[in-house]
Image 1: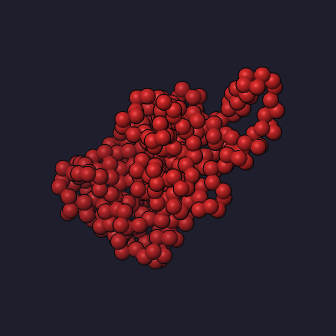
Image 2: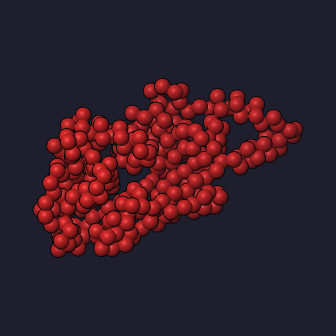
Image 3: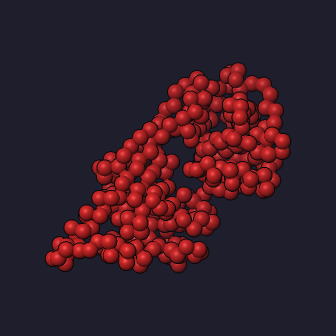
Length: 318
């Protein structure tokens, strides 16, 4: 009964895409650095990881194991083999950002591997619409705020370029109104340019606000976005509808704690796994196999070239 962990070539990606969220599937089609690392057991695809491959640090965006194959250690084996494959390609660190409560297995694997852990300054808030319907901060004007559906492709493209320049963005770019609850999702415009955005999407009977971003100078802009989304939500959904709001940085978290009059419920962590130990591990393994010392520097260069998952030009867990 064999298990294989490896980068998935273009002509076999279709066997793994059912494991990958829709937004990451679309990102894979547009970003050359986004790679699929697959798990195959007895010639059957049973899991996949989505990795943003960069040097010196790569990002593990997502990992999934098919339900029938969980509890067998495949998640840990996948991460270990992935780390080794990235090390061979010249990567020094692997990082991930997630809420430990939501991903206990992944968190246990990283904790046991010697990864560094630090608060990410972000996390999630969870509340029902009825909890905020009497909050006076959500009453009043939403001047200069417009529904996402009213934005042109050019306006959204300009916003997305600026967001990418700022770094990590946990949503699919470019932003498409069709992917979200476009009447509750909204933007703030100044002088004809989008300076802030709030996204809302339906998850079963609940509403998730996966992303809030602002370039605006005034923090009041975030209040205007939240006010618009809550006002529209109260019009369109039952007051018992549960909302989950995820933040991306510490200032936004503090702002929302004050606005929602409640603390953040689940805090995300950022883990960084140094791959330097792979040097020593690999040297010992090869010396045992060959029964002689190994010149690791020459070996790594040769293998890194032969194991590149995709040529440049061929062709991002909470």
